[in-house]
Image 1 (cartoon, helix red, strand yellow):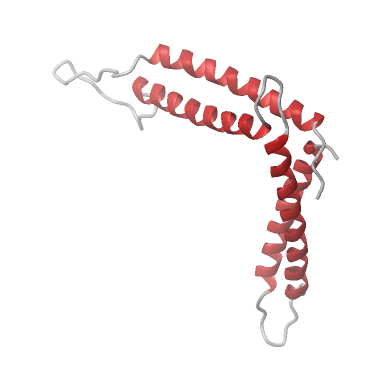
Image 2: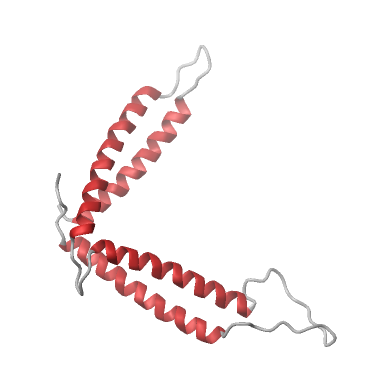
Length: 157
């Protein structure tokens, strides 16, 4: 099985656990004289089975990520860390540019000649250019990760 397939299975298992959790909660109590729509104990047991499978998948994925070498060197875990930090860096830079340009202000700001002017403390154009370069780098790292996910075999237990 390829790593990408295991990642898809992990996502499906997470969704299934959330659905089972909701079914357990919805049927955990019922009114006397009525029947619950579903057996909460059975749904809870099924959730436990799915969680056991999820744990196994996560272990295999993590093991694979930490040993799989990506193009250009480093492990897949290194590439994932790089992408996460690039996304955070992009978020900080775009938030700074938005704040410096006044884009994040709520409502209109009325300014008379006698009022103080609001000035930008940061170079907005430069920040936007940096954000564009970061977005490009994020796309490149993400493409590398996706390609590797489809090329690498999952380490089996």
